Image (tube, rainbow, N blue to C red; front, side, top):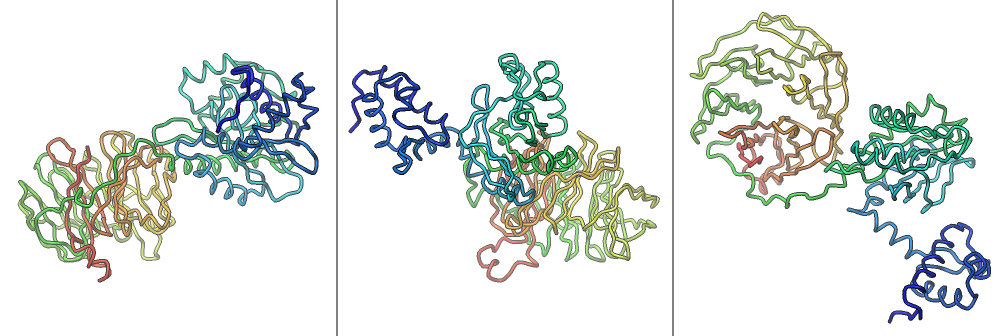
Length: 526
């Protein structure tokens, strides 16, 4: 039964004023203090407090005889920012950041022209940042607020900056709009924001924005602590860590996902299974798909719905790429070129080791990962005369290479660490694109589509997934086999995803549930 406040909206306004007054008093406020603050009769305040206590919006501390916000108020505030639950998605990351830094970490979301603290993990030191949960702080002088502003679209950000009252909190607060705009541009470029004693003297913070799979800004993570521990140099070291944590939170906030894939979404192609299927390559000129059984070993071709063996190879196949109108194949016995009729020509390349992964640009230039005799790995381009240039030294083996024709970059999987790296030939940089949790399976094959998405086959993960280029998962396709190994996009409209799979290393128990292991599959990628 609902309580009768007696005066309609007037009583409702008084109740809201009462809640706001209590929320502004973290240590609580007495009935007399609230009545004096709001200029209300004590009997009115008593009636309103009794109703709010009964509803859980307010709680009374019987020892100190003061009123504080109740758990129901906090639950409602959290629900306002759960789309899905931001707090739940961020809980692991804010505690991991706390453990990494020893400092207090925060989760916040934008509320109008302010940020609202939603969650906190207290640092390990006695002298630490202790901002109150549920407290509002300005956008312009907090790392959380600047991080959120940096991730908004230009029109929204400019509109907010025009509305913000740039009141100084400390002598270091930015109060000039042009300087704030420049600060936000710097923040967007580097991926994290810094509060250099702008909100409170003696306290520094570093924060990063949280965006969901649709690019919507949902909040920010931050690390805060005394300025003598969080030096500017340390903030710049922590910034990328906070940004990576924010990306991982955003990846969990997937909205408008397609319905889960049904088991028959991936259809097996008629034909024999492979011990270890891999290296699917769609030939637009030949209107067919090439792929390999790396352990049998043989090259197969799928054309006009018929999957047949094109050629046998002398040793296990380590890589395959389309070089012009022929297939370049690296195997245990060396390298060869294979034409559309299955005629092979040996290629004698003087390389500094064994080809471990391989891909080609559309123009035909080859890119390789080479494993040297001492077990080290390098990556770089090579030509048919055997000239190989080691551009990068790698810390681990690669599972797959793919060339991005849009950006002139290489994507590379590292199954052991579960990472996908981006290799930039222009400056020889190596950047980690994303890391997969071990429970998701090992990233095996890669494929880039024409819409800016990166598809990944997850060995031992029973699925293939699609990443948007900001590192968020935006599609998951369940596979009826545990070990999908590689992918290619093909078909007349390039809307068919071809997925190879392995059988050799699947346990007998798993084979009983996945008898199609080793088959080639088609999936709609539209």
